[in-house]
Length: 73
Image (cartoon, rainbow, N blue to C red; front, side, top):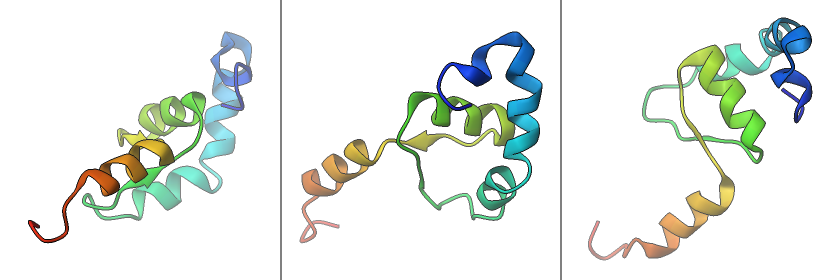
């Protein structure tokens, strides 16, 4: 969505079409247990709108990894 660009009504369809070129097919090609990581809020929203998959911010993924005790898993 490139920040607010894709949220604007007049740009939303274009933003989604651009995502269908590479981003959405790449996300859809991943298994359901593959973690999708994206940095921006608009990136998360666009991925969810276009693929019904939830993306996580890298900081949250790293925090979760640091909280997990590998001896317990």
